[in-house]
Length: 213
Image 1 (cartoon, rainbow, N blue to C red):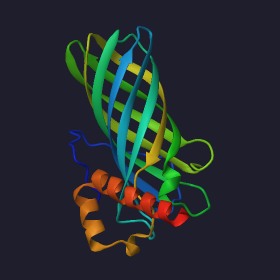
Image 2: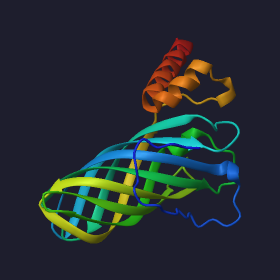
Image 3: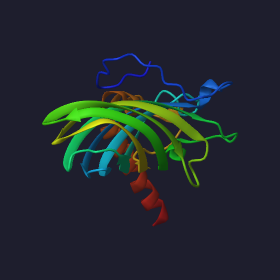
């Protein structure tokens, strides 16, 4: 079971378009993000995000990996001159490469296309659906879909738009098989995935630095 720290009120089916799949090559995640946008017909926005992802393979499964990132979105719609929003989404991705993968492969550059709809006369909310895939070296094979909700503040309305988003993320954790992790590591990872990621990632960088000295 994979729990997310927020509620999505409507039931939904996320289809990544895969037929015969290997159940050990999935990534299940949730993302929290904040955006600031401006535009009239061609809208643009940028923001930051943090994602928590759990893989289903035997080596890295059963542990939460956190990714910090930034994104830039372009949409074709008449929207607020200035607007801001915070949102959350759940996602499912599949790695269709034939090579073994590590959590590092889920970091890097991703591009997504999708649609969103909301009303933001003063403060409102919206929903969005996106299909995404990794691009460039290191991310080959990851394709997925996400379903999200947002709350915005602005003076405009988005009654339905298409969008393209380019994002880049960095893995915060250290990387090693789950069976090699201590009970304390696993427990703190369940209680606070992001804080745990920063701690283990920092300790790992210190160890690597000491080895080079």
